[in-house]
Image (cartoon, rainbow, N blue to C red; front, side, top):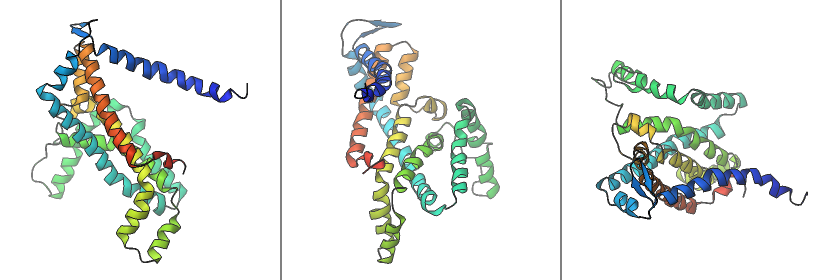
Length: 281
């Protein structure tokens, strides 16, 4: 019994994985080859769902928009999150201060998503907090139109996903001995070499892990672009549109294509560094 205990322990997770991921994915794959007949499908094999989707004039635009916004959000989160994680790891010495910072970062996630979405109207609207501050400071002469533009999408996604970039980088930097940084400075290493060769390379598994978290969270998000991006079309939004019209085969085909795009990007990212180094050498 003891010998087989490790297999028994993974059984609940394995069952969950099979029934809630493998089985639905299999059903979606099979359905993507059915003939769409509104409102439903006809069980006749066809590849027209894939051909019509890949050859549609909108596909290239949707693919570019999807990759541009998702990858762009990940890079913005990296640009903000890396310095923050570095300061949090090495500059903040008080554990109490670190706890307060974590509470501050987690606070937005304690608020319902619907309330957070509506709150952006009072923050990014023409009469919102951001425009009021810019007008009062004299930086602008008239309110900026931020809502219902790609800029609004980036702002909302960065705020939502920044935490998923900070934590993995913090975890990776926490494994770095600060004395290595001090030793490099004592040996007169240029600052850019210290940052890249020691700090960034040590944080690279966390960077890739955070990049994956942000990318996966955004590439399939269709609600936020639908609400705030001003009509921008993405692959995730096309899946939602087909599903809302009960065109299940076409929605399944679009979903499989989105999954393939995501897997290709993840494969490239995982080739850069072994993210298992984030936990152990």
